[in-house]
View 1: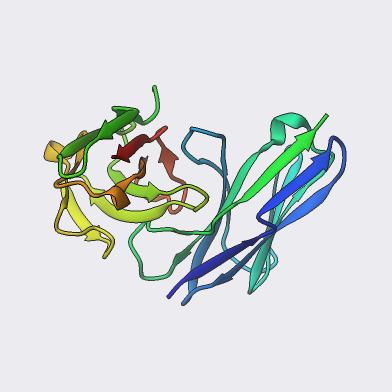
View 2 (view 1 turned 90 degrees about the vertical axis):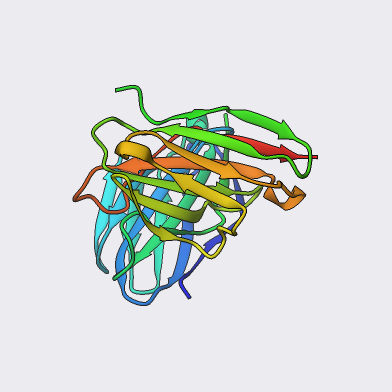
Length: 112
Length: 114
């Protein structure tokens, strides 16, 4: 069974204090790993897709990386508006498109 | 393009009642998904439609749950004889053909069963 574990569960940062979120996964053949952002009371918003170990994607202050067992979401010089829950998800080869297995998320709070 | 729309946004019901949620996907998206999310957890896959065909259902979707997508447009998710354990956020998402994993989620329908 596919499994995704995210750590830490919650992270508090000061504005400008860079850090990383971890996503460990177990999947029977990875088709893709995905990062989403979720604001309170809203649906998840897609951020990145990573397909193979060594791949990196960047968007503003966020950078996602992938190894064979885990992915990291690096946040550089975060701002209060980066506060949200960050979700990691995997899709296994041979499964239906859009059938993702999500982790429980990391709640990020950035204080001014 | 107004995004994925879900109604109602909030529903409070008594145990044993039936509830129905509606999802209007992004108009050009052929694929539609339902997920369920409980507090402090990530979304869990429930079911997937390609146009009007329901191609996969999770084991989480008991006999009390039914989903439809008539004519491949909007979708409904009905829960019969609700139980307190059904309390959750029900999320609908859509995506175009040829793209994997990049789902466009609605804001969800929150169900509270008393």
